[in-house]
Length: 152
Image (tube, rainbow, N blue to C red; front, top):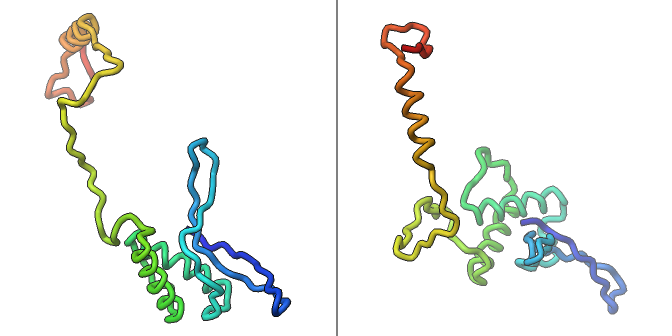
């Protein structure tokens, strides 16, 4: 996720204001890259520096993924407070899928009765016989220091 700035013109003040949005990139059904707004962050007047805004986006990503960086480079309490606030907003609006620290299982239970073979391939008896003959032709004795194959 990244921050995207939007510049809007205020007719009453006749000034321009910059608003920030938390956006994510994705690909649509045709494979084209798109961006969608996840959360509107407002004007972010609390942190005027651009580096602080970059740290804010990085900290929000850390909170979402549940994997903090090795070295905590974020020393600014204003950035941390805003990151925690926006993270809570994301959870309340159900914009994130999983909780931090939740591990993704590598194993998945599959009902074997529902599986169907689409492209079945066979190894072939000829290939197995050929490999068995080649293995039987060569012998590797235990006392052979080189570990090379020697023909009987």
